[in-house]
Amino acid sequence: MLRLDSSIVSVLVILLSFPFFIASLPIQDKFLKCLSLYSESSFPFSTILYTPNNSLFTNVLLSTAQNLRFALPSVPKPEFIFTPLQESHVQTAVVCSKQLGVQIRVRSGGHDFEGLSYTSVIDTPFIVVDLGKLRSISVDIKRKSAWAQAGATVGELHYRISEKSKNLGFPAGACPSVGLGGHLSGGGYGPLFRKYGLSADNVIDARIVDVQGRLLDRKAMGEDLFWAIRGGGGASFGIITAWKVKLVPVPSTVTVFRVFRFLEQGATKLLYRWQQVANKFDVDLYLVVGIRPAITSDTGKKTVRTIYSGLFLGDTSRLLEVMQKSFPELGLARKDCFEMDWIGSVLYEAFFPTNSTPEVLLQRKNLFPAYTKSKSDFAQSPISETALKGLWKIFFQEDKLATLLIPYGGMMDKISKSEIPFPHRKGNLFMLEYATNWNDPSESATQIDWARKVYEYMRPYVSKNPREAYLNHRDIDLGMNEKANTSIEEARVWGAKYFKGNFNRLVKVKTRVDPENFFSW
Image (cartoon, helix red, strand yellow):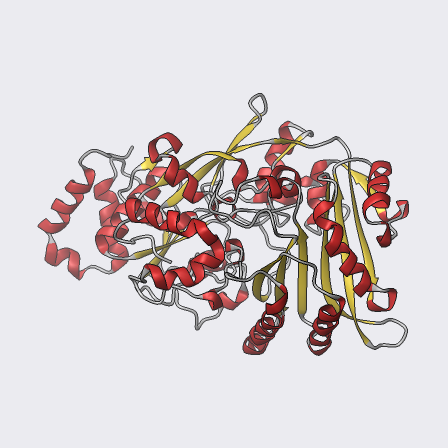
């Protein structure tokens, strides 16, 4: 059990009583001593702390380092990794880190696009608090809700819900190894978001360890902080240990499909048409478009391949009726469609092999580890065919590029831009993600430059003043904290892109709950 009343004072008194002894210890030993002093139990904290001298350190560090760019030896490493087994361990970690003057990086699933959950280029020393062992999930079918610890993954939550019900789900992302801690605190979109909103829109309670080491639920933290952590980047305000989420109805039968169209098949005109109608689709239809360079099979010439990947909350017959009415140009046929239950569609969207069982969602493994660079945009008007043809020219030059277009509309148009910090709502037709993936680290500089070229080319065709960006597609090209006390106006440069008008309210919440900016990124 954790002492919350006078414990912080007690730690300070004891530490100050042994200044020379404490100062002479390595930082991990100082931390362990602080933990033992602060905890009423005699838990062997050394068994959940990994230093670079520990043979398991590298394995633990890289276990969920999803972007291989940040797994290289040249990337700064933490002083140690702390893997709490219970929420009280997180509380002690915050108090002791603050007392010892070390910065915290919090990792849930390791999918931060810039590796900021387990690396740092500005704060030394720093430690990683890895929440991967805080992963319990409790599903309450009667109340249509679930409590999920922050170290659990999207896949684990989908699986645990499906164990209890085939007709309830949660509107989370398609990548099963993403951690819930970061996914929900940045917004979280996925196949259900046009019908039910973002993951963060469906959070009804949370637990967070604040800068004082207190464990607070929604009532204790207050509505301002609860607002801020749902889309405003939870790690800026504390360490989120658990979310309570609202479950949503899903039908017994859903239908999925993937249809390929190449330039030679009129892909440019088809994509232009998709932009005009996608945000008006039936809310039961989620139809994204993936774009990649390709080689024609008959001539061997470079081309561009568009992939129309859809999930429909209903059977094939109704889907075909919807498509005939709203997007007949795609030519979707019954042979393209596959019916399955909701959990089956989760596996399909994640590109698991067709014979996979739902248990693969428990693996916590990224199926496609690679070196990556991603950037995001929001389009508020269709991109012309002429502009698309200019984009194809860039794709002809680099075969590792990819772009994903995610349709808006539906519930995303109905929720206020200030309901949570995520502001990208009505007025957006679709979101874009630009990415490049490679396997040879020597290509990193070149590939990152290609991603930047695509982003710069798209400037005239996307949102402006500010050019909006999605927090969960974090992009330090937009700006970052280069020092411990970045000014508000400096932070506004990128903060306005992620949060628009909600940035000011986030600053006020941050100033109140963490005035010394201990939780800095």
